Amino acid sequence: ESMAAELEGLEAVLARSKNDAPTMQSILNHIRVNRIRRPDLVLKCAVPLLSRGWLGNAQWDIREQLLLAALDLHKFDLAEEQFNMLFIRFPNSMRVRNLEGMKLEAQATSTGIPPEQRGQYLQDAMGIYDDIVAEDPCSVTARKRKVAALRMRGSEEALKEAVINMNEYLNIYPTDSDAWKELAELYLEQQQLENARKALEEVVMLQPVSYLVHLKLAEVLYSLDEYAVARKYYAQSLELNPRKNPRAALGMVLCTTAIEKGKKTKGDATNTQLFDLSRQMVLDRYAALKPTDAGSGVGGLVRAWLGA
Image (tube, rainbow, N blue to C red; front, side, top):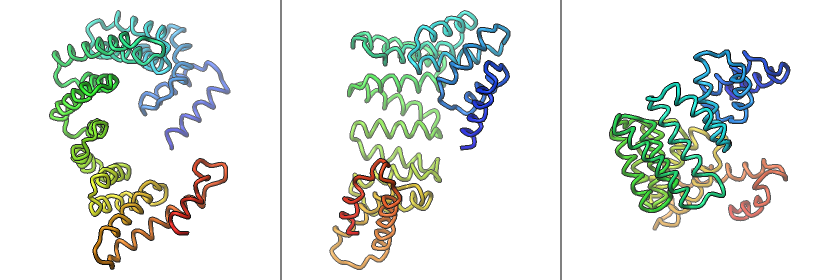
């Protein structure tokens, strides 16, 4: 929130003093350092700055930033212009070659191109990434971008290859929690719930205070009918974020209900307490919705389902 507030403050300053070079540079630096995705704002600041021609070596970071923003907005002519400038300046740079692969990936997502052209773009991008990995097996960007390109292809064969590549990457960088998350998503796309569970367990160890990771693992365990274990992760997710976590509360309701139905005898006080607590959380969440809020229309159905 503080990063967003700081960026809003910089935007306000820029609005009062249009084309103020120091402010535009501060905005671009803030976006770059904090990895904020605002391609519209990058274009608004980078294009006039580069047109002035006095940035010296500072221009190259801005050109790379502008290239990525242009790809986000499918402004391929602008992206090509920035890529050519970077390639002329750094002809042997692996970083620039990665940018070329990303440019091809973005072109593959543009509307109106035939499927064969889309496939060729992705194939060319993966060829670039393969060449980079052959030269530098530890290249983080190239390995991850190849997985992204394989996921874009979407075929069963491509997804299996993406899993292989991501596992190879994790053999080199086993503490990359984002990579474990992506591996879990790949397994889920292929309905491999047990493998997804193992990947998410790795993420939990790396991010033990992330309520979203505990929630994701709980949902996978629930789908595997492992309700008792799922309940623990739903509970941990709710403990980490009890105020804005309705999905975990609803999951806990479903999980405790399934446990209760599967028991031969009644009397599990813990299960009953967790059901009552999560049920009230769900009811409170719907009660707080305004008539214009998304989901408000099903509030009555939820209350009826929960016997309120």
